[in-house]
Image (tube, rainbow, N blue to C red):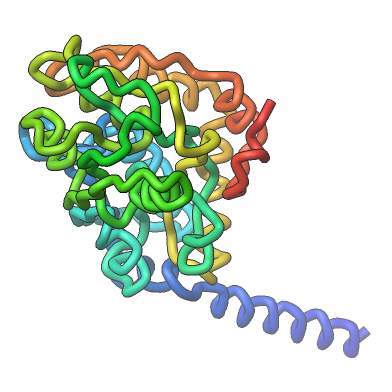
Length: 302
């Protein structure tokens, strides 16, 4: 009996030690500092952008705050300070990798190349890469871009797809890299470029917020299949990813997930009261019902 009690006590002691040693990586750092840092975008409407008070808001921000709540609960913290750090297409991965930010809350495509550097939590949106142009330019297809100046945002999958299509189709396009989406769209507005290649939902947002939305058209031609967006987090940090995955899966599978989607895509959003009027599609419904961090577009096909 004494031996059994001794073994039980030893097991309990070892379990206590294991629990004490469980915290590693991001969770350990957040526990020690009482701070979690979110990377946000300035102009990725409606995912992550600044309102009139220069406060980051958006669909991806709402999702990130759900992850923050889950982290706070997991670590049993009374308070958890949220620090907000601006990122761009070019800086988001380096700032995540070097520990400056803990989550990247934006409109970042999940693909196999990026998964070699970082990780994603469950997909929150599906998009395709297209181009926007002025109707007066009468550019109806990718081939119509031949020999013209076309802009895309640096550090994105879109500029890579544009470069690949340019070479494959021998289009001789003059590709202009822009620092962010707002600058890229301005180049089309001011006729410095005939088209802007980007995710269709972001193009729809920029057109809706422009001075003359009726002047623009988004191509039917696409450079890609529907691609998944996900919140980025550091690679090789399974404990933190587990918390993020559980939080996002619970959100997407609940009625609240659809409500948050409709808040940002089917209703007037600040600061200008624009309504993007983008109903939730069947692929998106499927990804909410069965949450996944897969980078494969075919995984979301109906």
